[in-house]
Each structure stands twice: as C-alpha cells, then as structure tokens.
Length: 259
Ligand SMILES: Cc1cc2nc3c(=O)[nH]c(=O)nc-3n(C[C@H](O)[C@H](O)[C@H](O)COP(=O)(O)OP(=O)(O)OC[C@H]3O[C@@H](n4cnc5c(N)ncnc54)[C@H](O)[C@@H]3O)c2cc1C
Ligand code: FES
Image 1 (cartoon, protein in one colour):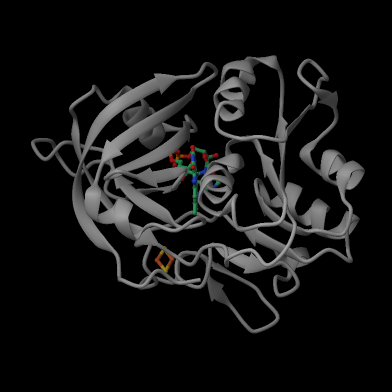
Image 2: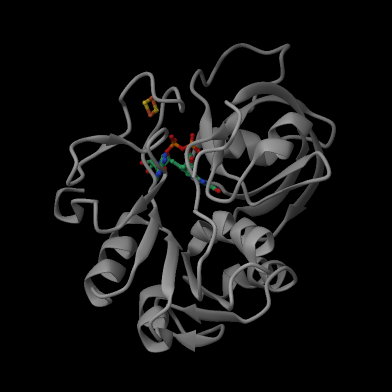
C-alpha cells in the first residue's frame, strides 16, 4: 500500500532516547509531516549529522518506522557500523534530516495475522501491530532474538504488544529456537507478515510453503526513493526496487534463491 502523499524532507528533532542494551535503542523524533503520512511497513532515510557539520557520511541510513503518532516518528536502532553509531550517539535536542515516509507498506489486514520478526526486524511489525491491531480478527506477534543481552529490548516490545511469543537462539528468554522455529510451531493458517535478515525470510518461506506471506526486505540503499536502482531484488516480474516497489513484497513474487 502506497502512502497517499509523496515523501518529504523534514528537520527532525530527537526528543527521547531509551538505550536498551547490546547497541539497541528506541529513539523518538519530532517530525510532524512524516508522522502524519506514515503507514506500517514504510521507512525513513536518516541523515544523522547536524546541519553545522560536513556531509559525512553522505548517504542516509534506512530505518523502519516503528511508530508514528502525535507528530513523532519512532525508530528502533541496532548499531551496525559508523552511521548507526552516530545516530545512537545523538544528544536529546539534536536536529537531523529525515526523508520519508518511503516505500510501500503492509496492506490493511483481512483476517488473522501472525507477525514474525527476527531481531531488529520487529520494528515495522510493532507499528503494524499498533496501527492495525484492532482491524485484524487476531494478531499474534512472534519475536526471535539471539541471546539474553536483548532482554531490555524484549521488555520494551512487551509493553507495546499483547500476545507476544519470544524465542531465543540460546533459550535464555522464552522458548529455545529461532523466529522461524517459532512461526512453524505456532502457525495455524493465518497470513504472515515478516521482517528480518534475508536468510530468515528465505527459511520461513521454505518451511511454511502454503502460507500467504508479506515480507519486508532490506537492501543497502543510496537514494531511498527509486532513482538510483541501487537496491534491486530479483522477482518473478523482473528486478524490483526495495525502496520504491517494496520494502514489503508478496513472498511468492521474490526469487529467494537469487538473493
Ligand atoms: C528498509 C530498511 C529498514 C531498516 N530498518 C532498520 C531499523 O529499523 N533499525 C535498524 O537498526 N536498522 C535498520 N535497517 C538496517 C540499517 O539501515 C543498516 O544497519 C544501516 O544502514 C547500517 O549503516 P552503518 O553505517 O551503521 O553500517 P555500515 O558501516 O554501512 O555497515 C555495517 C554492517 O551492516 C551491514 N548493513 C549495512 N546496511 C545494511 C542494510 N540495509 N541491511 C542489512 N545490512 C546492512 C553492512 O553489510 C555491514 O556488515 C534497515 C534497512 C532497510 C533497507
Ligand atoms: S536506493 Fe536508490 S533506487 Fe532504491
């Protein structure tokens, strides 16, 4: 589903920051225009440097919208490298450039939904749960994490999501196993919305082949709005841009073997 208005660039102000251990954090930015237009599954490109500093790093960093209300855009951050480290280190009150909302998100639910998130991939699913929770006849939330270092993050998600099923690789929190193991164990014919590493998504599609699955893909991005073709993925209908044609795709369409 495409948002009704196009994206915009907006000066966003960091208004709240909650470190959640293991390089994870929940950040809230005041960005009213983007917040008003945002829909679950869409993302923002984040240009972390203040206007006073140089354009380094030059490219924005894509971040799923984890919440949007009251003029605020929320993201869940996992530090992966230099760009995300800069975002993590921003002080309250920092002003950044945010571009969004970008991409097409999840379509309004028709029936029962199971949300399946791997690691930080839960971020867009949290927004989907809050935004569409009342529309679906039921919405279960499955979250896979690596180890107990993610405990604070799990607690944070648990404050927003009912019917949360947590599975961890080492069994330290919830059941032992991956998000895919959890989805296989709990699946009862509902539609699946999922986000996480490509290996996880591919495994999910293979292990529950009869499920209707909408998968949010990640790719390295440059422009974020369809201009550079730097983020294409192979599909049954030819190459598609994750930033513009996705990031949410019908899993049947994606050529998983070629990703
Ligand atoms: C649509 C979309 C939504 C995203 N949502 C979130 C989110 O909600 N929270 C979050 O923390 N991260 C999210 N990411 C991933 C995030 O954009 C990358 O981790 C970030 O751009 C890395 O930048 P860096 O400068 O910190 O790391 P770099 O130094 O550029 O790279 C560090 C490591 O991260 C890997 N990496 C970089 N970009 C990506 C990417 N796009 N996907 C997978 N691996 C990558 C690199 O291969 C490298 O191994 C999302 C990515 C996309 C495409
Ligand atoms: S990042 Fe430029 S087309 Fe997708």
